[in-house]
Image (cartoon, rainbow over all chains, first blue to last red; front, side, top):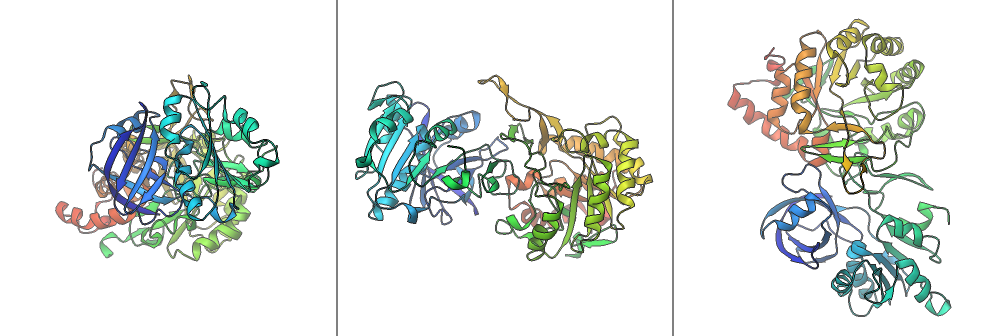
Length: 251
Length: 303
């Protein structure tokens, strides 16, 4: 973990309430997809934990949905604003376990860490597939285009405006049943309700990126602890990525 | 840095900064995040006799200039703390270690005090009679002088190590509780624990915290903490350790002038893991500008 002062390099709205925030500076501690950063926003006491969507040189890209006053304020800060950021937080996805044809599943802005994940898997010569669920067309269009070419993608929209109409589970059952749609491993990120619904449907081994309200974000306060098959774990530092058997939820 | 040297209950700390219970785990977990050995003393996460998972999430809510927590004393239980956590801390930290214990029955305080009395890596014991996030026991012991005295009595019989009693502000007259603890043999008083608080999510129309209420920390409570430290310092002769929203070298000096011989920092560290280092850097020039030679010189000078 490092505490760094990063400059806002750019803010780009992808939809009316989702923006791409690029931060520039010492991001040397950001090393792998699945990690997050914890951003101090002037005027707010708690930092906001956000997954890293991409790292390019000394810039990290973050995809942020405006969830409340803090993220709203963050979306309005001008270019070159200096932000105090804790970097290199959380464990990353276990890329070596992916096998040749891993499946990426995401819901809404859960797609954020999957963009960098997809790039890395392609770099490793893997053939990832992606199932991306969204609420609305605007979100679906803007966010799914961030997944790199080379990833075979199925889109699901709850409002039936694009791709398969329905939620991620419906789309999964439609598009991924049968042996011809097999996958070597799965990576899942999105709302807890989606993760819980997908948990019993997915085959074989894989892992989930969870989120939780956090205090510190670096393992000191136990504000984000969940109960798992292996005892209490902190989402910020034992996670946010947890393997299926670690969670040990009932199927 | 002798100017910051702090003597309390027969122990010498290099500086008056203590890491507050619940904000650094058992210390070793955050050894990569900060230079532990800069910190004057470390207070371990609240330890109960039996292991506890604590409350369901969400355990954290935000307030203006503060954080509300309802962690609920998650800890692996006293035996595991002594056998596993403390040795791991001692491998990386050479300073004073304070165990923090919570009980639901008087017996538990007696047993825990005895266990930590026998643990040679523990230098002091802080009695938590003020956690608002667990049902029964604990905070109810801290709400009146007789109950508080009973806890101190139970602990006192079982340890000769310095006993600190951590008080809650969520009570009628904190001065009388402090005095009762002193009379029963406490060696120091630490205050304040968190202030009972809650938030409601106006979209869901429900409390934010799973436990509904939690404890507020952070700068929001600093003036409240300061006032309680001042009151208690005027009532007891034993040392007072002040805490509640300290974020800067100025806050440290202010709290000491109110009567604190040393201070605990908690929420400030959660927000800024570099806080101990930055306060230690800023204290000497601040003291110069205020004509303070040593931090020990100003304890209670505003009383």
